[in-house]
Amino acid sequence: AGEGYRYVMIVLPGNMRALSLFSVDVIGGCEACAMSKYKSSEGFHECDFCKGGKYTATTANTKCKICGANTYAAKSNNRCIECQGNTSSKEGSDEIEDCKCNAGYTGPDGHVNTTNINGVCDACEVAKYKPSVGSAMCMDCPVMSTMSEQA
Image 1 (cartoon, rainbow, N blue to C red):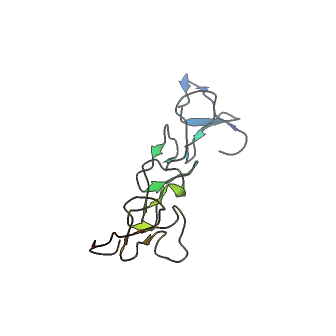
Image 2 (image 1 turned 30 degrees about the vertical axis):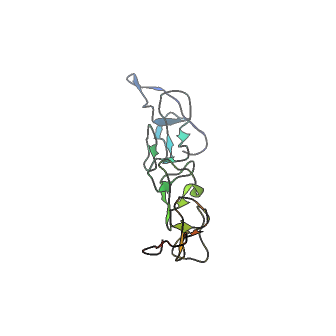
Image 3 (image 1 turned 135 degrees about the vertical axis):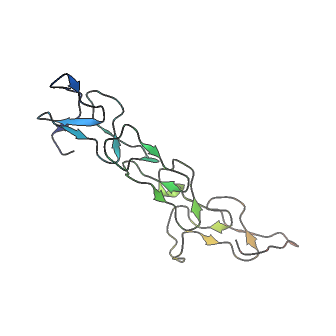
């Protein structure tokens, strides 16, 4: 929708009302809510942007979809973006910082690691481990322990 559009419910000829997911411009024509927007009810209000962690990939939506695990979407996004390089996130994540380093990997959550072009989090070095998700540092393995492989 461009400037000058109003989002309202109107009565069209023949007593048919405009659908709730359409907007109305100043001369009375209906227009679908744009991608990344939705309108859940009829009335005199604009189509709303999806909140963070949700998206719409088409026009004319009455609700937004929730981003799945290992993805995120900022407010007003029309798609979910995959977490990169050995990171994961919970369902409904709304920012790249929600992509946390997996267990066995360390680095800054949600940021591209400039020393490892293959991902954002580096595997723990041999004889080190990290049991939790997040940006914590890898720890030395306890004395007299063994490990089968890196990460």
